[in-house]
Structures are given as C-alpha cells and as structure tokens.
Length: 360
Ligand SMILES: *Cc1c(COP(=O)(O)O)cnc(C)c1O
Figure 1 (cartoon, protein in one colour):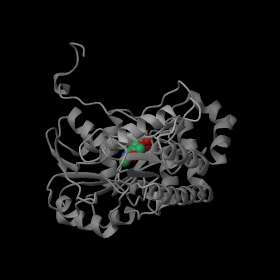
Figure 2 (figure 1 turned 60 degrees about the vertical axis):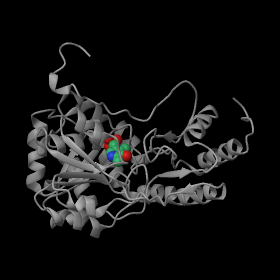
Figure 3 (figure 1 turned 90 degrees about the horizontal axis):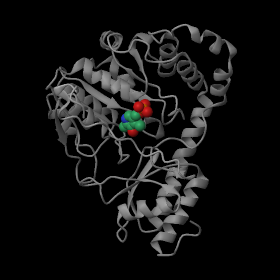
C-alpha cells in the first residue's frame, strides 16, 4: 500500500475471483463460466468490417441498441434498463448511487463474496443474515431488515432459489429501502423477478451475460428497474466512466441476445447435465444441494472438501472450495459439458477409492 492511498480505503478488501491458471490445460469447473462458445452470431458480429471501421469514434455512452435488445428480451422498455461492464460494475454502481457512506446493507452470510468486499472497500455498514440450517435464504430476516438488501437468487454457492412471492414479500416489508436481486443464475430453472419491478419501485434486478449467455470474456451485465432509478444510475455512471461499454462488446451482446434458440439449448443442456451429475454424486455417497444454477454444491462424509478440491486439481480438474465457516465442508463444481462432468466424476470416484491418478 502506498502513502498516497486515500485514507478511507484503510479497511479495503478487494474481491478475489476464481483462479484462471495457465500452467497446463485444465477441465475448468471453478468459476461458473460455460464450456461452450457463444452463439455463431457473436463471431459474425466481431468479423463485421463496419465494426472495425467505426472504432475511431466513441461508442454510444447511453448503450441504447444494447438496452433495446435487453428490453425486447425481457418485455420492458429501454428506459428501464441500465448496462454495465459486467454485472459487477452494475452492482458496484448501484451501491455507489444509492448507498450513503456508512449506510446499512445486508446480504446472506453464505453468498457471493463481492457484496462483502465492496461494502468493506466503500465503508458501508454491512450485516450478514444467516442462511437457515438447510441453507435456504431466511426470507423473514431479509423482510425485517430496514436497510438496503442484496442477494443472488438463486444464491451462490448453494444454488438454492426463493420464489417470486418471497421477493415481493421482502420488497413490501420496507418499501423505502432498496432490494437488489442478483439473478446471475436465474436462467437455469428458477423464476425471474423482472415483472415485479413494475409494481415495486424499490426492486432492482441484476443480470449478467457471463454465465447463461456464454460471454464471460466480453463482460456484459445490466439491471432492470423503474426509469427514474435507471436515470440516477446513468448520472453517476457519466461522472465515473461514461463510455463503460465498447462498441465490439455491445455488438457481441446484441448478437447473443438475438439467438434465443441457442440460449435455450445451452441452458437446458446444462440443467440436464447438472441433474445427471447430481444423481451420480449421490450415488458416490455425496450430499448434494438441490441446485437451480449452473453449479453443484456437494459434500462427502469421508473426504474433506479442501482435500478433494486439491486432489482434483492435481488430476487436472479445477473446482472451488471456500475456506469459510458453514461451507468449508462443501465443494462447488461448475456444470461443464457432459464429457467434462464424466471426467470429473471418474476422477472423484478414483480419489474416493484411494487410487493413484491415471496420468500426471
Ligand atoms: C458471476 C457472478 C456475478 C458477476 O458477473 P459478471 O457479469 O461477470 O461481473 C455476479 N453475481 C453473481 C452471484 C455471480 O456468481
């Protein structure tokens, strides 16, 4: 830390993303990305000579064509959509825009680490609301909290979802505080709360193209809320980074949103692979949470999750283990292709049986 760092960042806690090692090829099941490429329209959009020719000019800082594509997809208007450089930027701008320094914010005790790290870095007063014993979100605790609340639905790394009725209940309990629902994994079998934004002024729904749209490398996210909240977000964005999305990034995003068939095929394949892998893990003696996401959270009575994660890594399979209270016994595995999951299952079975790796 240099002597120039602003004093208000003394308690800073930068978010640590899942590792992206390059020392050898891995079956990469640790960051909830997708193992398949984006739809063919994305490559076509990138190859468009007009795109390259236009790069001398700034792209639209209002991100209008992309916002319109999002609006068409979700049955809302562009005035209800704000786009960002990944949903992390959208989440960060939401908290910068709507939370005073020192403001109260709550999120689950077991959840996406970014919320805690952002709160620490920006001096918010955060509260962790414990998940119930079965790892379900405690809807009543979120309803009762009278500051900003943020949670993923389905939650990560548990994969458990609450219903639209539960989200409405949380919004109604305190209409004067903001409810941010991070729907990063909503496309894998749970219900979106986008339609609730019309009736609930305090609700903001955050989406990403990094997971279900196969575009982590492009890093596009958005939120959907009532137009005056979107205007506030744009005002703060224009004081921070007006041109937050590049022209190629927006062209890619629009192309991916236009191919609904590819999206449906990819997401339903992942749901099938997930359910098949969950059953196979149960067959190996694991307890598996009923995931509505593109990852599986599982624990085995005989093997420590940290050991399993390390030994899978040696075998060339990356998974994620959190050295944190309540979930340190659990392994989180992203759902890849059926072939990747077969390999993961074979290596897991081999480790459970105490056999040596097939090849280093
Ligand atoms: C992956 C993830 C994000 C981040 O998405 P980006 O759009 O890549 O920034 C946000 N929230 C949750 C819960 C995630 O798992």
